Image (cartoon, rainbow, N blue to C red; front, side, top):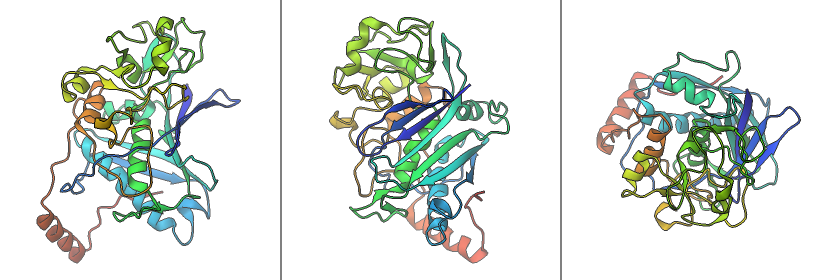
Length: 342
């Protein structure tokens, strides 16, 4: 079982790197989306435990660490609210770093290497089994790495010189949920098998097609090498063609990010931000500074349904006046909804 770490470069691109232990790392890109104006946090059946592994820095910084942990918990709650019909505790090992690079953050989850198959991530398996199946055992279900060299807006007030922490966190966590492919530029999958032979793919890869609707990877896990040109064909050359996603997109496949130069880890794992209708969605291939959305679009929800989350649903908005009243009561009673972080 290899650990697939989707490392999300939230400015420019997403790359995949292999380390000496055979693990695969993907540098992905965070995205944007229209923020849900009236929606308020809702209690979800998913819970998150974050194990912070970088003492005295980042999330454990003496000055800013507590606020950063709060922001991560709140982002997880916003995402978890869509999964209120599932019950699972998800554990993540969280590391911090500070490098002047375009990488903002990364998150990932392990997956079995079985050539000729389409695999769920450990996080995905745990959610869909309602916590009954934990393929990682005592090891954390997922990993997160965060770059605090950048300026981050941790609250709902994000300046144009800051990156939206919560939006990026939701994007990254969704990759660990299985919203990502395993493909490489040469047509190989996660294990890097010879193109044209059986390899390991994600559930997400099962629904990728070319513009004519023909699947890129056969049911036996073999990439159709005659379709290599589609991977760099631009907007509309690669589509996510799951039934739920198409229904949310007017009956059409959803354009995936497929720039003329293949971007390892980013290409065909994100919505196409060059398609105007998708450009403000969370799972597109780039993000700029400033306040971004934290709500999933109908298309993104459709994709999540197609990859197995059939019970996902948008949270029911709470009218602002009622929310503020309830918040006041919570404050008076001294009750906290924040999940404890480790």
